[in-house]
Length: 131
Image 1: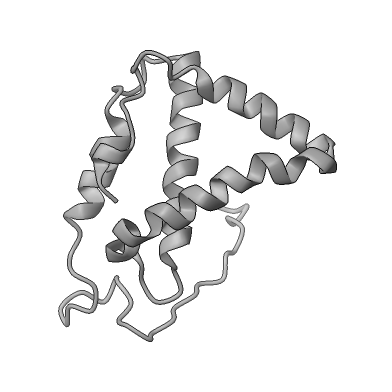
Image 2 (image 1 turned 180 degrees about the vertical axis):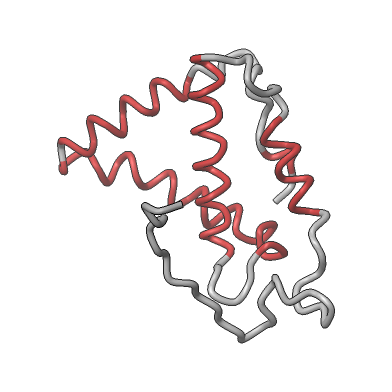
């Protein structure tokens, strides 16, 4: 996904995220409204999936990449509104640029990225109490 698709966290008007959170909370408590709030996100994921294809891997669809980018942006916007000191307003852009520089998928020397058709899932295990 192009970093240009998401504005900086300090852009004027980025407080919309606070209102959007209120809409989601209302929709989750009121199922009749839920579809109206969810529909634009489905449209965003569909519209932004083509540029996100380059980040997809086996087991990770472009729409999932978009969903994660939207979640990252929303979460960081909320954090920025509450306390902008811990990170710069261009953090989302810097993260996307870092992802852009990752090794190509399926590179023989890089086993950290699954090859096409290869599925790797690690089971999550809680941290040991005796560390």
